[in-house]
Amino acid sequence: MVAEAAAAAGWEVLGFCDDRPDARLPGLDRLGALRSPPPGVVIHLSVGDLHARRALMGLASAFATVVHPSAVVSETAEIGVGVLVGARAVVQGRVQVSDQVILNTGVIIEHDCRIGENTHIAPGAVLGGEVNVGPDVLVGLGSRLLPGVSIGAGATIGGGAVVVRDVPAGQTVIGVPARSV
Image 1 (cartoon, helix red, strand yellow):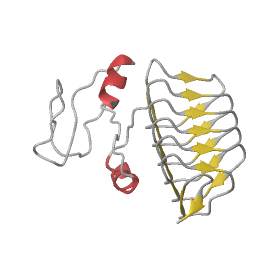
Image 2 (cartoon, rainbow, N blue to C red):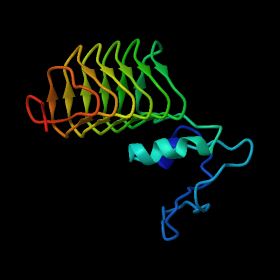
Image 3 (cartoon, rainbow, N blue to C red):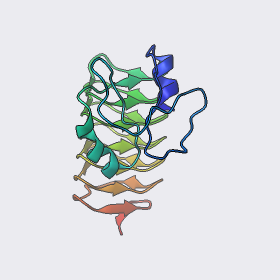
Image 4 (cartoon, rainbow, N blue to C red):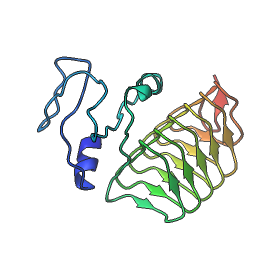
């Protein structure tokens, strides 16, 4: 998905790195395990696991921000380094997206939201206006965060959850309305 988005956005995709020697991606060369790329080469950490991606962030000095051409990003949005904005994602005005964030396919981030570093927002999630999401958060597939809620660092929002009030750091919430488990 990331390689296709990067190519569609005009990047030259040299290949991919994976610690699994049997890893394959059609049309791309496996360049070996992830290590420091040579000077002038930028990488994108398309690792979905938040903890693994956090551990890998120190391996390179240059990260690519990839915005799929079908995404809509407001001119007043601020997008960090190493971010993926997936196909058909919408990022509205005055949104702040920190470094190493994944905004997956069809995500909608409404006005004045703030997204912390190393957060993964899964496909189809919708964040209402003025939502604050801390670092290292997983926002699950198709979830809804109502306007003005805050999500603490390291929290997990379950797929399909509807978050109507703040979620403390480290908590996992599921359901409609979302409740702690």
